[in-house]
Each structure stands twice: as structure tokens, then as C-alpha cells.
Length: 100
Image (tube, rainbow, N blue to C red; front, side, top):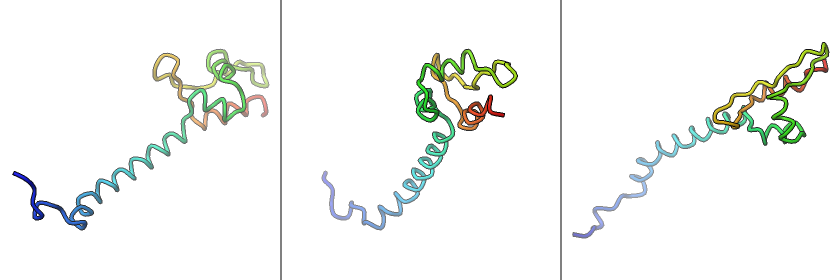
């Protein structure tokens, strides 16, 4: 039992069926792109700040002194052992410590 010409979809039918799916994919890609722009991995944070990954890990674990000498740690979320995510906002704020 094979296919006949009547079993094939027209281009218009395919567009009607796939249009909503393609739009949903575009929406999800946009959301994913925005989310990845807001949070950095250790490697991305190192590149963004111009420091090595060891320094960024040290900021998370040991911190650095503010102008008053108080040790402040970089806020980061650990999603798996050693797998951190750092918000751009927190990273920018941490970079200003000691400059105020």
C-alpha cells in the first residue's frame, strides 16, 4: 500500500501546520538567549572581567576586601558541584567593590 498524490500535503497546508511550531521555536530561542545573557559561567565571568577562572572562583569562595576592609564574596548559585552561575548584575556590582 503506497502513497498517492492525494496523500501529499500542499505547500500551504505544510505552512499552516508548521507555522505555529516555528513561531514557538523562535519564542523559546529568544527566551533562552535572554536568560544566557543574564547569567555567566565561571569561564564567561572570567572573560567578561578580564581575570582568570581561578580568580573568579576565589572571589566566590574567599571574597575580596571592600574599602573598609570587610571581606565580600561574589554571589553565585551552584547548580551542580563546582558548576556556578553568576548574574551579570551581581558581577558588575562586585566589580565596583572597593571603588566607592
